[in-house]
Image 1 (cartoon, rainbow, N blue to C red):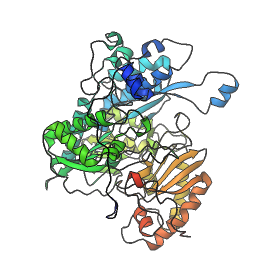
Image 2 (image 1 turned 180 degrees about the horizontal axis):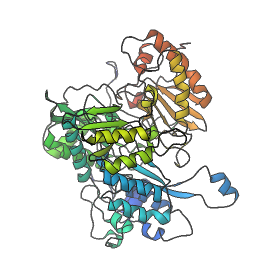
Image 3 (image 1 turned 90 degrees about the horizontal axis):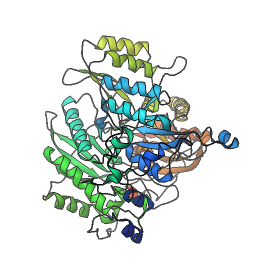
Image 4 (image 1 turned 90 degrees about the vertical axis):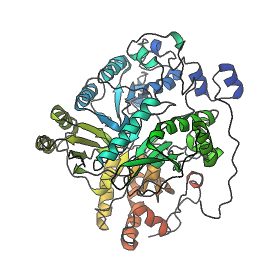
Length: 597
């Protein structure tokens, strides 16, 4: 905030652990999801019985909440709803299954198994998500256990990929910094393993493991019966690249490097998050605060302490205000830091200086400081499939690469794929396959800096198209940019079908958030490095109006920008949109401040 902002007053934090008894929870007025968790027997519910009900492809409503903790969502094909409703048929139910892959690293052998699952049980595609993991779409209920068994056979799982727990931990992927990347990956993997739920429910239900009836005798040493108030997301970044969008997440670790590029410790960020609800100003996206600096051997304990404070302080009555970002706003960063330090029994140093320059990926071949080679491929919206006509055959091409690759694969936070750790001997063969299957087909600067969520037809929350529409929109906008000499200028653009913000649109220089069929809110003025939120510029812009709305802004940018000035920074300096300082002022001073035409 600016220097004239009056001091904030904060609430007094709670001093008790979360309520985990049914009657007390009812008396306290906790949200319905809290009751579901209390009664679930450590995430079992009636899932095992529901899988045996073959009359429907769905599961019960309460189990639909619990199954998220197992890494899946119940969905239906919304394209087919009208026809099936007309014929009085049940919805075309299926499940989205998301894997837990800390840091997004898989072996070639695992890649081949995941490819086989996609073509055997899912819709024939692999989808790289914005959180460095894969998800499948279109898995029907009768194939769930077969799919989960195949995932387990690859030494992978889906535990805690969704739900009110610590979800998939992201880590920096910059192949130029092999040593720092290794430290980031190892931290992310260790945190992921440390904060994993301990319930046996996943193996019991999906792999026919030994049954613990009702969860008796089990306990969750970190989570307790009610787990967290809402989802919790952790990332690890290595400057100068912010490709994991660290400020958009609940908890983050920023590597502080010495002159030799070695990690000397971590700045810790807290309180970021993207989701909000249209029309409800008490919900908002928020960028994380940089809270403290910790040494490498302290980071895992800090992660657990931050998460357990959120476990105890988070809002369990009003679910829409239950994320850590609202906890920070409610009690203040100083009180939150003091509680973390109290739980760890020490006072930490203040954050160290750092600099981010971008939040995108570095495409093409690079050589790491260990002499291994890495190829970053652009994958449109993360959809790994074989495109028709002369489009790239990504699914088949990467399958062929996996058959000969002696390194690993890495997913990026921007939904792209790195063929990583390629030996000098294998590089020519991989280059030949990349050429044969068109995996390096060109993508312009705007497209390279784009992301989209799945949205329609499968996501039940989607209000508008996203993945299916963004490629065509970018083609349209590329024409506009070219007319102003901006074809090669890097500008971030992201689109989501709803305000939950899965593709993190609120920190994109151009953010489009679905409001209804072919209608979007347009957000502008975010920072290119992902450190500042955008501002609502125009409401309910139709698909046909997006280009005409942005074209005069592109023209003004081309004509009046300063050397090296980014698009989002220009729009603020030029007085087009107001600067968003953080979540609470996200809904203030919205709209165009002046007409640039």
